[in-house]
Every structure is written in C-alpha cells, then in structure tokens.
Image (cartoon, rainbow, N blue to C red):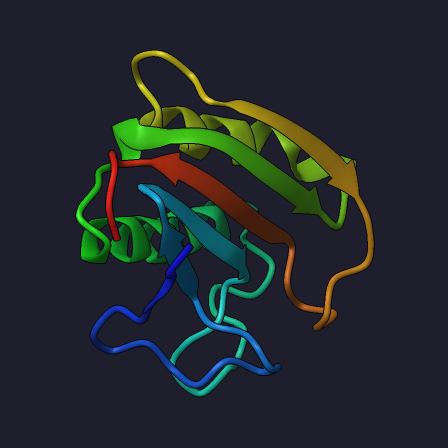
Length: 130
C-alpha cells in the first residue's frame, strides 16, 4: 500500500525522525503534535488552552493538506502534563469537534519539553486513494 508524507506549508523540521503526517488508503495519520513554533520552541508557556488551540490548528493544517477536514477525524490520542488543565483543554477541543465527536483517550504523562502541556495525535478517514 503506497503512502504519502504530509507536510503543511510553514511546518518546522520535526525534532525526531518522523513526518507531521502520512496518508495511505484514504487514512491520514497525524504524528503527536506539540505546541511548537517552526523552531521547535514551546509557544504559549503556561497556557493550556492556547497550547491546545495551537496544536489543533497544526493538526487541522496536516489534515487539510491531505484533502480532509476536522470532521474527518475519527480518533485522537491526547497526552497532557497536568490533570488540572483537563477542563481548559476540553473547552478548546470541543470548538474543533462541534458535531459528532471522534473517539479518543487521554493520558497524563511527561512530554518531550517541560513547558509543553499538551500533545495530540490524530487519525482521520478522508476517503480512498493516496
């Protein structure tokens, strides 16, 4: 099954050996997305809502570059640093998924940079083909 790497315009170089997204057979896989600027610096330090908005905008760019929309997202993997941020994260998250909600899980854990409060990875089904 052929795959295609998805790199939205303006995306910085990943901090590891991965692509922002890939698509194969009509499915878009978005890598774990952190609140990084194009130089891999954490943005909106201390603000979980703003970091969540930044992360979801990057995910949206990957999915749209692949030809889909946020309505095509079927699953999200959510990682947060502090449970205290859960309500703020959910408030922003709900703005991006106003209709039928994708399935998801949420785990508290350490993230790759201490100032990062949220990381989300997504799966979207946009149809057949690459």
